[in-house]
Image (cartoon, rainbow, N blue to C red):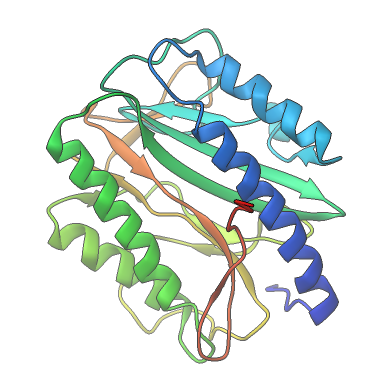
Amino acid sequence: MIIIKKPAQLEAMRTSAKKTATILHRVAAKVAPSVTTGELDDYAAELARKEDGICAFYGYHGFPGHICCSINEEVVHGIPGKRTIRDGDIVSIDFGLDFGGYVGDTATTVVAGTIDPEWQRLLDVTQECLAAGIAKAVEGNRLSDISNAVQILAETAGFSVVRDFVGHGIGRDLHEDPQIPNYGPPGRGPVLKAGMTLAIEPMINLGTHKTKTLKDGWTVIAQDRQPSAHFEHTVAVGKTKAEILTLPDLG
């Protein structure tokens, strides 16, 4: 069942999502060669404590990190730890925060040092895919209009869309209905209504769309070990325009 949020619930989500985005922004700013993924994880946990929030991923189905930190060919769910970020890496950070009983979820992919121009194009296109999907999160459209917008843009650019992992509804729970694939024909699925809250998150690969999960049971990589990019926003479906809830407070 897709939950339509009432005005007070949406306001609570705005607060939680802004805090989520602000923490992610600050953690992402720490990405640099010689920094470990564990250091980023510790920093996210510290910031969450200062906000009196709960890291939504920590302990979720046994996940051991406060953030997901995925590097280069790692698509999603990378476990933070002792790995040192190197010059030329791209680092995807996914973060969720439960504040006041509502969850924000957002992700970004950032560059450490200097990267190959084609890798940069992958990041740019993935951000454009996110924007294209968000633009379809409007009352009267169907759910798969979001999916199709992402796929068309990514594949036109020569990249592939991860099919094994999807976006999702969000609210009191990290994962609510509906699931939101990043591919598929338009005009399918539920009709979108104002007050729905969605986590839209394109995962786009330079090479094949096929993935596999490593022996740690969490880290997902591209099968051909080509790089992957991941961007995500929590949004509220609007009557004429989606509202991006996970925008950081830069003041």
